[in-house]
Length: 186
Image (cartoon, rainbow, N blue to C red):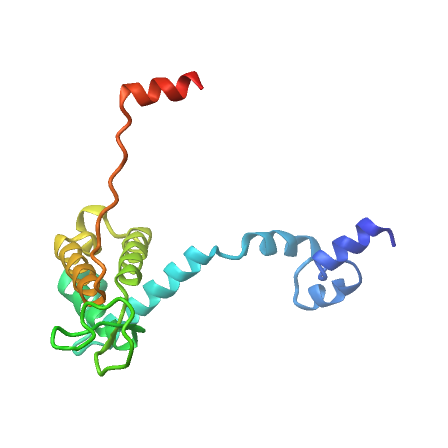
């Protein structure tokens, strides 16, 4: 067996000596190759998006009464985000807490663990994309609703204050004509 044949048999063990197992299943060994190529593994983002979408759909089915995806509104999404807080790992201090506003508190407290703003923001982005991939129209996408953006902004500001680290949007540096000319001459 040449090295090329060996690498092919390692890459696709259903070919060659194990073609008997393919014929037992009723498939010709050659027809198994396109099926394997078609089932390429999903990227990390795509698999996370699918998992998030399935979790959200399951959440809607488990509500009393169950909510059809066509009747889903931004209020259901806000309820879902608040439901997820119980699984959070980010300590968010209350105003009355001795550690409120301290980036690195020296001790422990009874303040709740919540979902981090960045996690919620990324989740909404994935769910917005999944909604449209599953047949939803961009115009009716409840994940694009302004109430969702307002909620995320409030979570971001609340968590930043609780940690004592204000969130500031990064500003783009303006390039003046003088700077662009000097970099072009270099």
